[in-house]
Length: 246
Image (cartoon, rainbow, N blue to C red; front, side, top):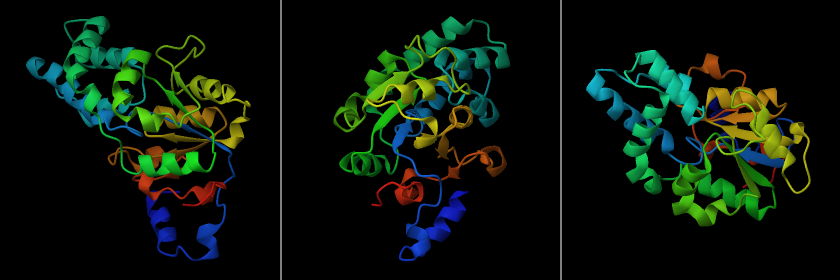
């Protein structure tokens, strides 16, 4: 279902149709971090372009699409190979960290995040984060919003977690995240919120439903496998998945 379909339902909020559970009901929620909860993808795009500018390259959307949702080392490999850069993956990662360092602690929340997380927390819905980030990067990026991020039961970071053997689009990160709730939950009872296509594929491979909030340039065709596509978390209706309504 696309965000256009979602908007049709919003026009009739008092109807029984808009209040019913439209998809399979869930009990737990798992969130991606970058580009979904925090506006870090924009910073990453700017930092990468600064590295490529002196070399005469452009970080175009088709390359960005191949990097979204990937761990930093995998992203670096894509860029180094795509542009045949005169240095390797490790050097790219070092330059990227240098370009990003001063701004990581000033990243804003994405629209609708605070409202949704507080609502789910107030209604005792277990939540966790499943991200491709590493621990150091996660701590810096979320420090400004540390009080809000306390609503999560746990955080799984594939960049720093040996139990996550393969990154997205493999299902490992979401299966590991589901297993670490206080009471481990079956995949079909988990709803994943994602912004990247590899993350969408990982959630579906794990047997979970997925709400995709992608970059607006991602085509409807490419995002079609998602359970639901939205422009923003502001448009999410919890009751469609059997969760308490706002």
